[in-house]
Image (cartoon, rainbow, N blue to C red; front, side):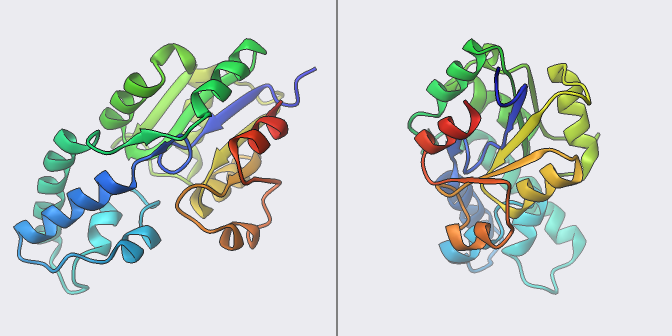
Length: 218
């Protein structure tokens, strides 16, 4: 018997290393509008809250909402043409998803990354056939960790309330996403948050490597 009936994965920092493309795109947007780009450490602290808030974090506190929208629009257009320049899949993650599916476990992707970019990343590195449901950020649902996105991707996956489902992610956002929807919270430490930070959240499981994650899920 499988330990889980379904597994939902975060994308950025969990399935794929997208950090450099995100940072370079935000830096380019700041420079375009005459703002000083922030450090990589600053970007790392603000990367899991969705694209709009990610851009907001790099601008002065007193920036107007209109200017923020202009910078965000430029950032989106730039990122849409550069988001695969440096992005890579974490070694072993595709094989893990394949193994889950061989065991009959449903798989999904739930991310605050813009949905159109999410689809292109998944198509390039995994293929749509490896996931039962894929959902990125849209205007239709509030961002993670609010539950509407989670319930929607579970619906698309064919997951029902009686199925044991895990949420795998690299951040506090993913932890709270899991807990808000009564899912098993699994934190991975190879992403955008430190092991110490994640341990303080007390997730149900933690994995320092893809092999450890494999053992937790299978």
